[in-house]
Amino acid sequence: MISVGLLLLAWELYATYSGIKPTILPAPSRVFEQAMLNREALADNAMPTIRATLLGFACSLSAAFALSMLVDFFQPLRRALFPVFIVSQTLPLVAIAPLVVLWFGFGLAPKIMLVALVTFFPMLVALVEGYEATEAEIGQMLRAMGAGRWRIFVLARLPSALPYFFAGLRISITYAVVGAIFAEYAGAAKGLGIYMLNAKNNFRPDLVLAAVGVSAALTLVLFGLTVLLQRLAMPWDRTGKDTAAKRLWR
Image 1 (cartoon, rainbow, N blue to C red):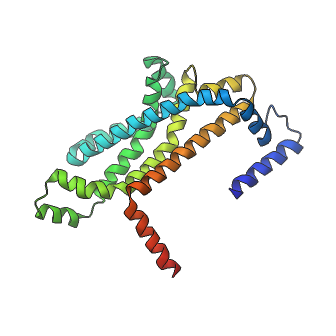
Image 2 (cartoon, rainbow, N blue to C red; image 1 turned 30 degrees about the horizontal axis):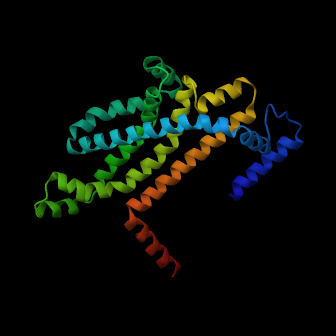
């Protein structure tokens, strides 16, 4: 908070006393003022972006989990599908977004698809690597007790993958809002992306930065929710960290 405050202070002083025009670099105070004056428009345009972000991320999460299970149970699928997934991540979003909008229209579907495309791969890789990190002795012990492949997956491989999964989840969630905004840039009636585009065309950098601040705040909220979800899903991990911290303190 101190570092961000110092950065905003330096920005405010430079914008105020350097003689630069507000139409080029508005001060943070002006950005905040315009955000308050246009809060209804910002809120109205933020809702479609939030909707596309959450729906796209939900589809991405479901697909990543389902495919990671298939890859774990049928190893040849990993060699067959991973090159395709890697190629999908090399596609530049700036180039692919207009094509997706052209193919599927200006509705919600292309935005969901683009968010899913951006966020899918990190979670898939994290889950697959997490399954592989399961200690072999645990699987051997469960097999000796008569557990089948599915039960070993549920009791051993899935819990072992949780730390990796949440690491991938935190990476993906930071890209989700960006993917939705890029999709809106390519074509939308409402959304933070189209709001930024209209503000830029009207030479209003203060409104552009206000919309950027809203998208950044939204990303931080989603990131915080993933951290909270990890603490709820992995209470043993939190307990272990607390115990280690107490030992270190002593």
